[in-house]
Image (tube, rainbow, N blue to C red):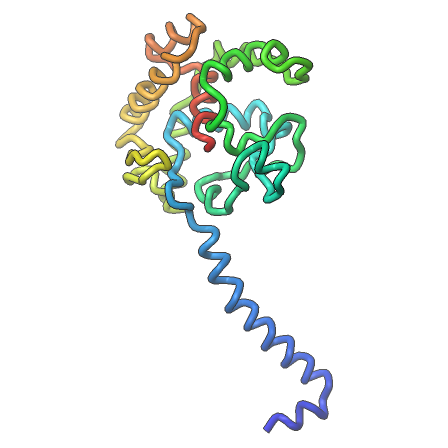
Length: 229
């Protein structure tokens, strides 16, 4: 039936290519789709955590710190389990990075505390001798922009169906909704979360600001870093 193909090398080659390509797609696409789905326990960022992510990007933390643990023993021994694609399902944009002036932060929430981050952001070299990381004193004075964060949550939840407004099980077993019913509710939720973070901090300016209903950038940033596990 296909003897005529043997007499036409070009058509035969094209036919082989099409068959192999189709078989490859059948094998690869389902696995790729499955791997890109959210890993069980992966939940969207809360309003405060997302605000901290904005602070992280604004201050170019991703220029020196990657968030991608490669599947090599030297990496997993130092940083923890290698990264899975489904863990980035709710990240926009991805902050994988390709350079490490500082350590990878993919799972920094597993081994650093709020107190450690506060001290480190004030005086990096005092915490890590010979560190070349600069201090970020303005984060203790600037307040976060919840309006912009909430607008992003609304947009992303509608366009990309990110379940900010649905109860999603998290890695610690809790089930929480990550977005307020409206802007005022979102601000109230972020402030309550900020109070929990600030309770473990020592800077009186931070505590006073949170008590006054404001959220310093450092609080949001630490909330974000604590969520990376």
